[in-house]
Length: 303
Image (spheres, one colour):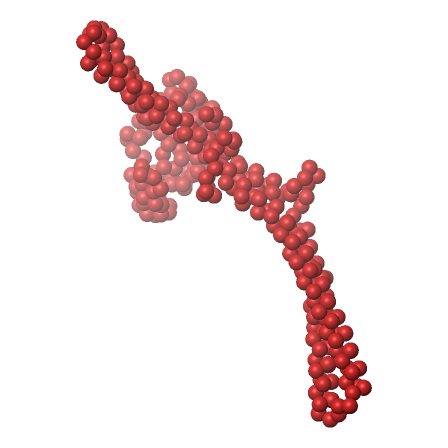
């Protein structure tokens, strides 16, 4: 399995945090543009309904006003009938005003917001969509690479264990077979030991491939500083410490470089320094996220 950090060939999961699942969030930008158009269409259809209803009320009031004026009714009945027509005319005006607001004011606000929020590109699509997709992809790329490395290690480990079980089965059958000579049985036993060693090598975190100086330096660049500085020299900034670590690491070759480890403040230190201990002071509270991480309070010396 390739570990180049691409999102292709990575399984899709339900969680947003899984590789590639940010695309559903990016798609909401394109969906937002479409929803603006649909909302304007909804307003316009409602405006047509309001206009039709207003016109029907007005026509109805006009028709019956003429009937009342020519009819034999008089007194309070005539006044009440005319009041009924006048109420219809006012209601017609209200619906006509609503139609105007939907067609012009409300629809225009959405159009203006849509124009300001979405910027089309010459090659198609929206600038906001492209920026969001690139931002998510760059943020996930190192973690996708690590995930692929883990998946590859798991596959290699399970394959090694499978070969080990097969070798053990063959060894058992060879020992039970009286026709097999001790030399042949020993070959099966050696095969079992070799498979076991290979499986342990795949499982052991110390069996990783060798790291070149370029990769080691780039790994230092990617470390997120925790703002934990040495208690002996608080004036030294994390950037100065990183720079010193880079300069020191350049004096070693990949072959004769001593074993190093990453300290809590993101600085690569020598194994001898790890044995002697480094006094540090926490500047803020921190709760360990992994089983091998420390939890501490601000102001204390974790080491």
